[in-house]
Image (cartoon, rainbow, N blue to C red; front, side, top):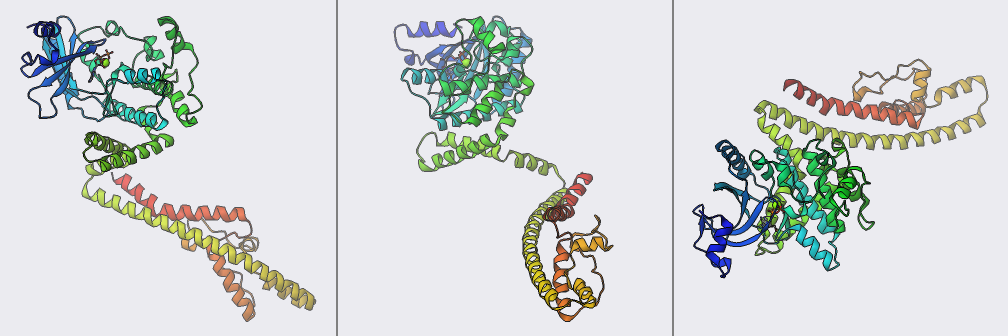
Length: 494
Ligand code: ADP
Ligand code: MG
């Protein structure tokens, strides 16, 4: 069989490639046109005769790897099977792979919008810049895609603008996992004839490559989307390498939010262990907020124009974003699915207890404010009463009586030997220390009752500070008793 390039030449002659409908590859693909040449080999647009209507256009990558031994072929095919199972809207879909003569062929999704590098060049030449919302939207898509693959322990190893494609203005990362596919069959170092622009310091220093090295490259892409220029530039290969390894971390222009610049700086940390993972970046509040916006935008997009052909893609992105937004809940959900019915019942109870605790907390806060107000009122009333009494009575008897008529505060309880609320008392009884017995008039009794009510909720009312502390203790108790207790028993029973 002829190599594809030869086949194209042979069949087409001077005729356009699109007319070469007779040349079948792997009994189903027909060459349409050459899309370009990359570091791995030549790329063609093909039509899949076995595909559903409307899904025929695909990409064939012909990778020349020399003679593959049978073991390597098996390994590469196993790896390819794994890749073909992956499905994410921000990843170029990998359909199949096969070996034809000395070429390893990969069939992937076709992205009609060309690559991000072309788009950046186009904008640069037209002296245009991408809008901030466009950059954030694309960055979120890339993050979701990288996160999806990293969660499955698949590295890209060659993330760059040229490997990111546009399809209906959505970004898709190409060649994810492809380098691993070829690992056994050729020396990767010789495969990378390309640029060092996106390479991490550790990769350049041969200190290993991991997910954090992909994060570095993604940081370089974020910078490039914002500035239409590489993050690390130089006149030659060595000067670029030196900048990456030793140079300062570049910053975004002032027109971009500080928070985005902080994210960029964390991704371009020279120490890979200090770089955040894709999951961690997605959890940064600023990014999480953008994630919600992107979700809303895509939902609207899908709703607005039902005939718009990116609707399906948008729906898939919404799905992916939704998954991310609720990742924690989803993780918990998968945990829930593993639970026995009894454990699920406990979890339901725990959630109900959490709700109850929330309501109790709110109620307690309201009560506290109410009591504080009443306390202040009582204090001022007593103060007035005291002034009047002082004016009209002066003998020892009445002054003794007066002392007794003063409101008994929680501080008094302590000073006159009453116990402080102990930790093991239940919240309802927390402050129910009994007042000192003493003779009282009817009016005093009433006042006493009012004071009792106050002291039932707040133990130390004399100082705002201790009031707050008491409140915190009270709330802690409420929360501990309901949800935490349940949670502990749930964990212990697991
Ligand atoms: P590189 O080695 O630089 O990553 P590739 O081999 O991935 O290059 O791609 C070579 C050319 O083919 C590029 O111009 C790219 O735009 C185009 N191409 C690659 N994959 C696709 C695709 N899935 N859809 C459309 N064009 C593609
Ligand atoms: Mg590529």
